[in-house]
Image (tube, rainbow, N blue to C red; front, side, top):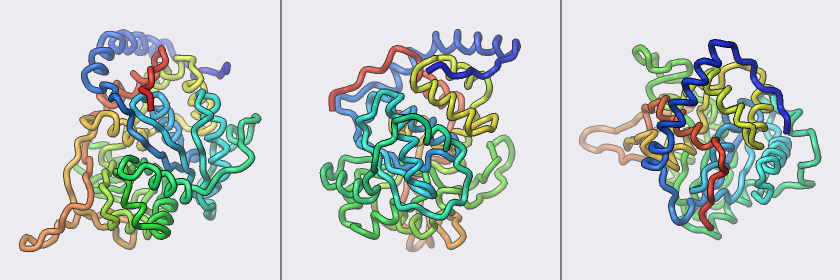
Length: 340
């Protein structure tokens, strides 16, 4: 596709040149040392509310460009789940991966603006129907018990429904990697000053009962909260990415412009980055309680009877390391994929 590129000022162009030079020197060594491709790719399912904010698309793109992930399917959650599924049909087709199944969750009342609806509804990519997200998830777990990582980067409707429908099968997940929660830092607290305190986070707040079920499910849970995921993608990084001219980056360019804001915060891609390279978001064991207002409260319990950890939580990350990792995955040539 021939998509419009971001306008880049002369000063930004200088920064891009410096960034590309430094990237081309450093990234091969960094990538070789930190992200070796395993012999057998990790099986994952992505549960997403793609189409509102833009970070879900950036997360999906990173997963598609990660040869050490085998994407068994993508499920949509929250709001207009069928149109979200149509968006994924087009995105996957344009990325050269139309074989990846897409399943739609139960629609819910719309609470947000579907900024990328035009992309979803254009073209001839949409499949005539999509399976049920909860049924798809449970069927895949039954097929691959103990092997699947569920990547939860949207409100947790499908997760809660799967636990409610078949808790025994849900517990056969290998793990859940979740973008959600706020432990010490809320929105806009980027760690430059004293923490401003936690806030209810979007993915938790929009289905508190399902979040409570997940944290009580006894499935290994790895949590990337606001504390470690407020990763701002500035103009230089955007221009570098969008200038690659690949099918995936062209699709991201178009979705970014339909999103209609300037600087994306890449909350969700940290889940993918963590799976491929856990050192990018070191975790620590914690017992987290989801309260009735959607806060994710550390609850260690009394000293004489401490609560056992129910999650591994990443409270800090290095944005420079993250973006070097992220951008390295979008430079040609196409990554070689390990055989399933």
